Amino acid sequence: APGGTSPTALPIPTLTEAVPSTTVSTIFPIQTPYIPFSVNTIVENVVLRASPGALFNAKTTLALNTRLVVLGIAPGHEWIFVQTPFDNTGWVFAELVEANTNIATAPLMQPADVQLVRGQVVDENNRNIPGVQYAVIEGVGSTGSPPRADAVTDENGIFYAFLPVTATGTWTVSFTAITCKSTLMGPTCECLIENCGKSDPEITTVTLPITDLLKFIWR
Image 1 (spheres, one colour):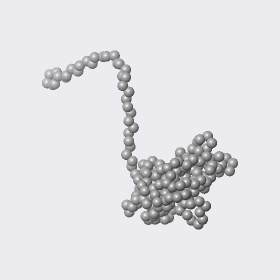
Image 2: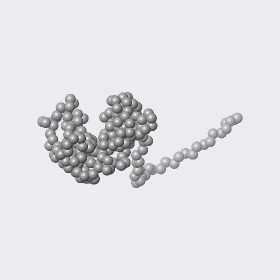
Image 3: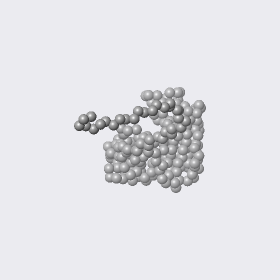
Image 4: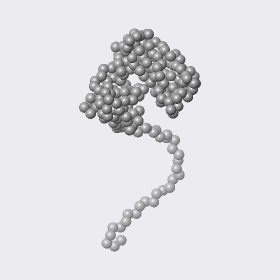
């Protein structure tokens, strides 16, 4: 064109018949980085512990409405690993905090320097029973206030009781309660079946350390 630049002619594409590919694409999941979220204590004197469980040392106590940053969660989802406003870290019982985010989205953390007593509760059709509480108590038929750890079954019907690595000998594992969040309970926390059923066995004993998964049938 006069006084301008001549346009460049584009090549005409050659049409070819599409041949189906025999290569199967591999889809890799995208790992989303964890973004820590905050929770607030809902009672006074929440204990920040060195490890997840009532048998571990208290590092400090936290006032009502203390803001905590959630860094992780223990197996069973009953204990969360947090950072306090004073940069202390430790474990708190998840029922004592309020969160706008599902705490189960926190990364799973395996606590150090603990031993586990685990048990699974299923019904007679092998369906997992969440929300059932068991106590793990030192000794057999102990009186007074022996060392004790309580744990509630999760969505897989498994409870995780955390004990110090120094705990040894015979301990008693016994059914203690059904929580209102259990599938055994209705919307107003009433039993869906007569008498709610029972754990079989209701009581058993273990010798620490133990690696086996204890089995309970809900009848």
